[in-house]
Image (cartoon, rainbow over all chains, first blue to last red; front, side):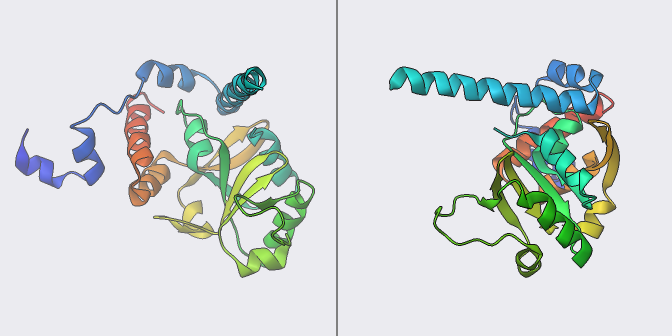
Length: 62
Length: 158
């Protein structure tokens, strides 16, 4: 790593150069093909799914 | 569960002046993340406070995390007396922010916003530049991951 160049980077870039942030590029490409509304609807579907799973777990535990 | 689209439609129908910031702005700009609340930065002129208070009143806003018996009056005066409110509503969690860390107040945020069609309404959403600035200023671990995602979205032409 070029130390002099590294010093000029913002703090986040210095950390991100050293870790795997776990960003999935295929997911981003897929999202960018959707309209903004579709992106939001998809997120809401995921939230509802998570809530259903939580509800099912609560039901089973009761 | 958050119904961001219905919440946004409620604010837009009432003519509230606001910019979407935070996780929902990330999603609208192409992020794959999931967020459980909607963050908006609102203009603090009196007519807008009146509109915001009236628009949300029917959704029974209460302070998130506060004891249920804590008295809370939701009106324009309360908005004028405070700045940032973390609320729970009938349509999910909503943060109404008079100021955003790293960006400033509504007029500052407006400079870093662009319109997107959200459910048929042109809606102001923080740009990737604005999100980057806010995330860098907030500086939490999750913001760092968002910064990585913003970099990837840019790389992919978002």
